[in-house]
Length: 199
Length: 425
Image 1 (cartoon, one colour):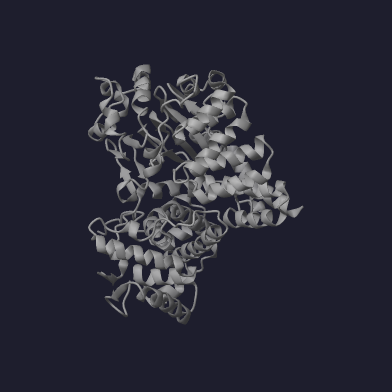
Image 2 (image 1 turned 120 degrees about the horizontal axis):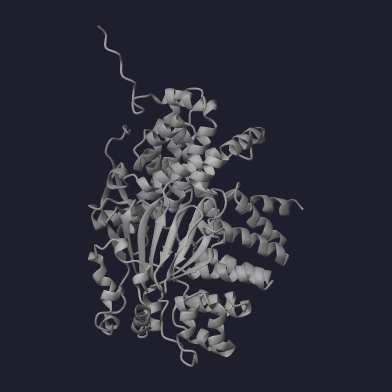
């Protein structure tokens, strides 16, 4: 005799199903989507921005925007990538806004945070120092270059993924990463473990 | 020697998910999703009906989520002084030991930001609320969702201990810049008061509640073991005595936050009595104890940011707004690296704009506040007031520039409609 199948737990329910349920007004499904993706989005925006405070705000805005426009998502299974795209667009806005505010004297000229702040406890002082140099260069890059380079070299995304997340063509993504890398090469040495790889 | 880094650099990082932040954002998302967007007027009516229907239940659960926190009896919150316990409208409680002060910096439906002066304060934040609580305590900023924790500050040193829930302690002096505390954990941030000062403490003083802060790192006592009531007036007196030897050089050399209880300025006729009166919220009496000439002398002789802030409060809250300008200006100009210089500049700008009707000076102070650095939760207010100051001062181009900056940063902000209306005129 065939055993009745147990109800799937929320962890087993595919994103697509949760999206469809959320579109139908199920706030519990929204909550499940949040819990499933919040950690990854938090880490991504925290690394892109280097500011926990801004990261929280971006995360909030990204999820709210995603939930409000969920019915516009044509492929519910693609929720993960779509949410990341929204978050990256918001990160770009924040970087540009902060720059404008600094230029207007609305924020202290010195930018706190960055990758050095996130360094593992086991990281050597030399590694921390190099990360601080990376932070300094990142602050001088345009928002687009900074995002593309961070997605590629810090997060390890493939070039195609970088292009998709940044909302640009592959050629543009490559150009931005190369421009950022030239600035990095002048001050810090970074080797790529898997030149064609990525996550 | 240059160290070679290997990509992806993410492997060198150790940014485990910040569960407190993730939970806090989850609540914010939930609250935002519950409130209809003003960009969707078609949904407004339906949502209003739904809100009305659910209003009673929501109120019972969350209290007045959209408005600022108030006292349980509905009175507004401003500066809290110990000893005593304040019951808030959302069920949270703040228990202040004798001499402790908490000043509310920002308070609305989404955030509650307060600055704690010296002393011991126990916060019982009702879990599940929609507001982001932040306690600014000199060298440490404490982010909270719902929890019970104690912040004990003695001059430059701050100790945070968690009894229930979790908090995140931020600050340049915090190892790694950030520390998450679980129940029964504590962290001590900042240097203790000078050991020479500790050595002058009367015997047994530490047992009374003002033990040298360096001993408190290992302190395993929970929040309930010492209530606000246990702190005696003698403790406060001892604080005064131990702080007397702090020099101005101590303050400026290492940019440590100042001590509330410091030596009276030379020539101050009322000695430290005005400070005790001010700490109790009796600002009229505090000002009377000083007199106007005594106030001026005390401002000139003040050596710490806390003393200057106390003087500014005394003037402002006793109806002598003009006199509050001097101590605030001294903080901005004399202690620009203090973590509270930005907040002092903001207070100065508000004072010049609201009480003194000097919008051009207010604009300069508010601009300076932004340059000196403000807690994130105060930046919106500072920018909105800067727009207003330039507008009232007749600086049309600057007002437009900063209005655009405000609307870009806070399109749905608290002052957005007002700024749009003003720009449209």
